[in-house]
Every structure is written in C-alpha cells, then in structure tokens.
Image 1 (cartoon, rainbow, N blue to C red):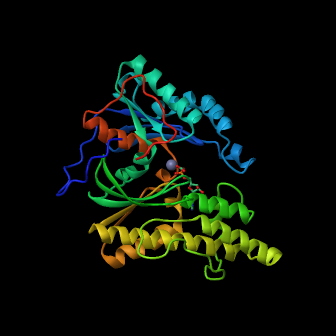
Image 2: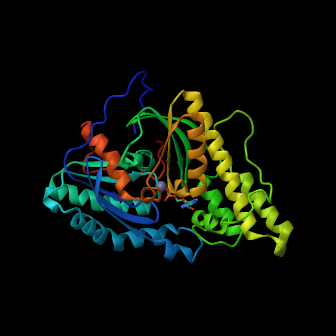
Image 3: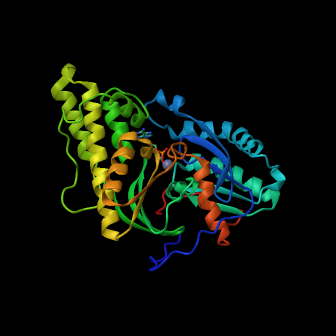
Length: 346
Ligand code: KG4
Ligand code: ZN
C-alpha cells in the first residue's frame, strides 16, 4: 500500500463505491465473503476453522489452506445469494491479498481473480490490516477523520494515525508478540484452550485482577508494546503456584495486564497527535474489559470512542469490502494477475 505523507488540515468527505461489491477474506483461519454497497453490509458469511485447529492448539497452515479450498465457493455463493443481488449485478471484487498464510491467501485470491475475470469487472487486492482499520465505517455513526486507531489482533498490535482512508502512519507497535498472542499463549499456559482471548475473558469473570502481579512490558513515555515478558511471567506463575494457582484470578490478572497497557498507550497516542477520537479494531477489540476501559478513559478525557461492531472484530470479509469501497471510489484497482504477499507493511 502506498503510504503518502500525513496531510495537514481537514480530510476530504468520505467517497464510497456506488455498486455492489463482493469481498473475500481467507488470510488465516476464517473463510469469509460479503457483499457491500457503499458502507452498507448487505451480507456477511464467515466459515470458521476454529474447531479443526483446536485439536492442535493453533492454526496449522497446510490444513487451513485445504479447508479454504473446500469452503470458498459455498461461502461466496451464500454471500451473493443473501445480498439480494445477482452475480451479474456485482460491480467489483475485493480480496485480502496481504499479509497472511501464503496458501490460505492464495485460495481466496484465486477464486476472486477467476470470478472478476469471468465477469469482466474490476478486481482489487486489500491489505488485511486496512480492512480492520476501516471496519468502523460500518458503525451507524462512523468515526470522524483524522483519528487514532488501536489495531489489536492475533498477529498485530499497532497504534495508527488515520488521516483519511488510505493515508496511515504507524505511531507505535509491538516489539515482539501481538496482544492476541499474549492472550492465546497465556490461555494455553493456564490450560484454557484455543483461541485464548475469549477463553481468558470468560475465565476472568468474577476473578480478582489484582491477585497476581504481572509485568507491563516497556516502561516510560512510549507508545510501543512488548508482550513477551508477560508470557514468561505467566509461565513462572504456573510453575511457582502449581496446583494452588487460582485460574479465575490468573485469567483476570492477565487480562488486566494486557488491557492496562493497551489503554495507557492508546490514550497517550490520541493525546500526542492532538486527535479527538480513537477507534478500536481487530480480534482483541472483541474483549469486553478492553472496550469498557477505553470507553471510560475516552469519556473522562473528552475523546470520541468508536469500537468496531463485535461481528467485525475477528476476521471477516465485510471489513475488506469497506476498505475496498473507499479505494475503488478513488479509481484504484488491480490487474487480474494480482499476487499474494505473506508479509507486507501497512
Ligand atoms: O483479527 P483476528 O480474528 O485475526 C488476526 O488477524 O490475527 O484476531 C484473532 C485474535 C486471537 O488472538 C484471539 O484470541 C483474539 O483475537 N480474541 C480475543 C477475543 N476474541 C478474540 N482476545 C481477547 N478477548 C476476546 N473476547
Ligand atoms: Zn485479522
């Protein structure tokens, strides 16, 4: 994605693609398709592979790609049917083409390319994180631009200045594990299974978040993150406490440690940029403790707070369609030989 320098001054009004567009997402362990019109989600179908990967305690890339092969056509077909539009009425096709598991990305990209080519309509490749970033466009009242965005997922933890759609600047990021990884690895150590974020949230209900002291990673006036020490601290805690470990209190303490550091850095970023609003996106944005904490802090500081709709936090094609809608409206598209990129900066 071309990163232009941050503009100064008011952002231009939001322009959106004015025909129904099909979006496809298969970068990790969800096969998803959606039909979007402007910023309205007409249909959104997500087929999750979580049950399959639970056996191994994490995503197995080869198995993920094969499961996408099976699911991709039925998922696309359901999304088109539920949208109320005929396939011949689609105006464009968007697909996540970066970053992600190469085999998984290839399945969605190949399906999207074949369909766009046969229908002779524009095709556009979208960065997965731009999808998360713009998932808040689906809110009844979308956030104003510019704003700060906290992206927290299984693979990423970033604070981003969003000047307007397509103009982003990374303000801070994790130096090691992502916030979602901290939840997932912590959950595994506590015997709570995969994926860990929701398991920790559930186990933490009624637990004492101050029972076990856990490190907050980097100290000082930073807006970067470090979560690898937290994982080690949870391992030490399980070794030290053994059978005496209170799982509820440990889950609550781990959740508190992650929420605290995310909230502190996010507020610092909004303040530093002189922004007046914050958005919260990505799989970990589904965490209720994090949503509540940021809502409180934003309200106390007079900032607007825009958490992504719960259904658009974990991976989905609708958010890819929203990002595509802004790019297509600006006249962008890609050729039918679109490639996939397992690693790509925002
Ligand atoms: O955005 P996402 O679906 O996939 C990536 O792009 O990585 O995020 C998945 C991550 C996982 O680490 C999962 O444990 C976490 O989101 N997650 C949560 C919750 N729901 C999902 N973390 C904390 N609390 C939750 N309720
Ligand atoms: Zn994601």
